[in-house]
Amino acid sequence: SMHTAQAARRRGVGRMLLRHIMDAARAAGMTRISLETGTSTYFQPAVALYLRHGFTDCGPFGDYAASAENRFLTLQL
Image (cartoon, rainbow, N blue to C red; front, top):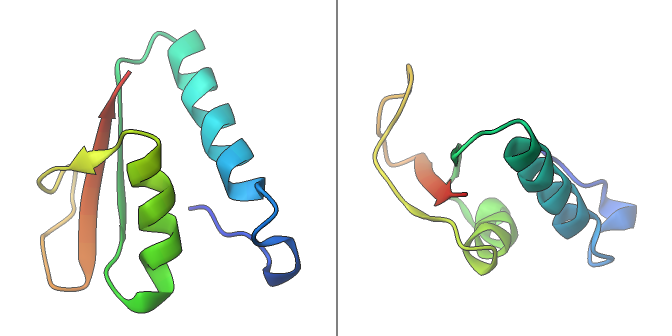
């Protein structure tokens, strides 16, 4: 789970965290990153961040079940 404190928002912290996660995944030999996030207005900045970094919509994975409350994204590394 990623969350940027209100005081740190709009300063690139989320972007830096996401890039770090992506770099660490590549270094570990991973070929895909998938994530689940919310669909409410609160999550729109996070979804925009993921989309800017190449994530695309995908179906549920793991133990997740699709609902109107969640959105699934994936990135081929």
